[in-house]
Every structure is written in structure tokens, then in C-alpha cells.
Length: 90
Image (cartoon, rainbow, N blue to C red; front, side):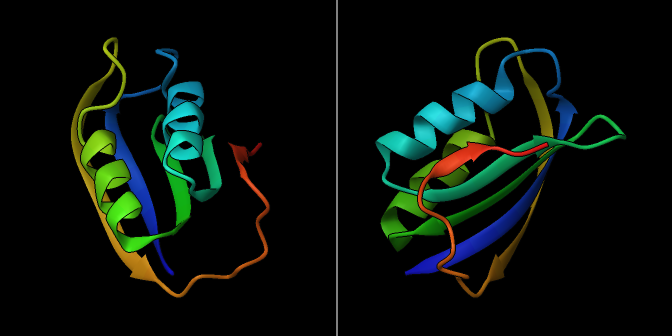
């Protein structure tokens, strides 16, 4: 199991990014969270199978159809193991 933290920059709020991320992460069997930041970005913590994480990261670079992703700042992390599913955090 692996994990990453990501900050997605661009036009990513108000376009269904968080719910789309939850759906995508759940389909991939990932755990963690997604949330909006005060400065207009979207922040993600994801953990799970390395191949599923790679697929999720690739999706984050594009996002849902209404989004415009300018860049994704990703750092690999140590899995915490305290998440039971992937959800929206506030």
C-alpha cells in the first residue's frame, strides 16, 4: 500500500471536482479524502494499491469535463491506514 498528497490548481472548484474524485477513487478501491481549499485549489489525500494510485493521479491531471487543471503538485507519503473509504472532507 502507498499514499500521496496532491494539490490540484486551476479552475477546479464549482465544477464537480470533489464528487467526481470520490466516484473515481471508490471505483479504484482507494481510501482518503478530497476537499476545497480557501485559495481555490482542491486538495487530495489518497492511499491504496500503487497501480490504482497511478490511475487516480492520471485522472487528477485532467479532472471532470468542466474543470481546467493547470497543474498537480504531488508528494508521495506514508499510508496512515485510518480511512475506511474515500470521502469529501470539509
